[in-house]
Length: 336
Image (cartoon, rainbow, N blue to C red; front, top):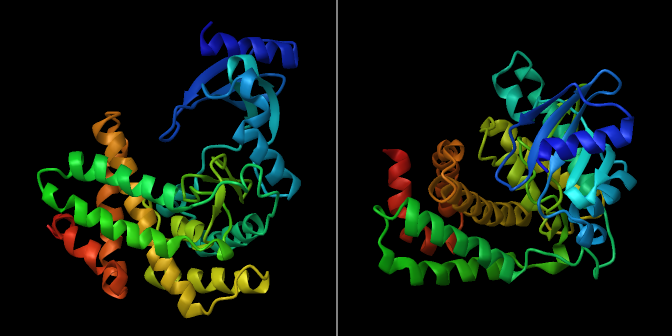
């Protein structure tokens, strides 16, 4: 049975009619496929086909677990309308196509600062959620293993492949040692909160002039700066420098007022830059993988702007100088 046939079957079961149209919707860097389903009876909805979702793992399916948690905490996520675990299919509320990213080239560009402050308020609401540390997502974290997996992914796909002609492969052992020292600094469980893990402008929809959070199924515990970095040091849009600094302070003050943070603002900024280095390196590894392995060229143009952030962190923190010196040929590419 094709995905379209499965959608029609679930739609017929749920609404006792056939859809008028099923059109593919472009997704992001995942195995999930999305479709906009149209009918006279219900208007439109989004069908998500996920090959990892099936009847055997329904109880532990991360999207459903997180959807329930976020809904219970009144966070704005698309409503779940129907599902068919046998076919790996979910029907979700259609919250439109307007991404936060799209505002940067729109007549509504002046609303961007207000939206970002509202989104950070939602982020604080997200990061305030607590749960059983033996259950997903609270049992998952940005521990040393996870951070090094992401650093190693960058080494494999960015340095051994995408940037191979520019990079001295004999430096990889030294670089990995520097990455291990950075990971050790970032593993601070006493400061961990719940993070979305991919909290950027392509995973926030603007629906009826309000933000809606999507793609939250990979949430895990980590430093609160992780999601702040994803939003403020975004690979897909570049914020005005003044707004960047304002939003860092806004996030820090909100963390303090919600008793989610006990460190000073200087310490917050230190971990922000350390985490930004790791997060941007991780993103470049993903983009290189999509470009070279998956042959998906849509991420190629995001590599250079992401790389352009990194020298600032290296210049501000001595702990990043060792890695920065080894990665220098990549930064010279950005300048050129």
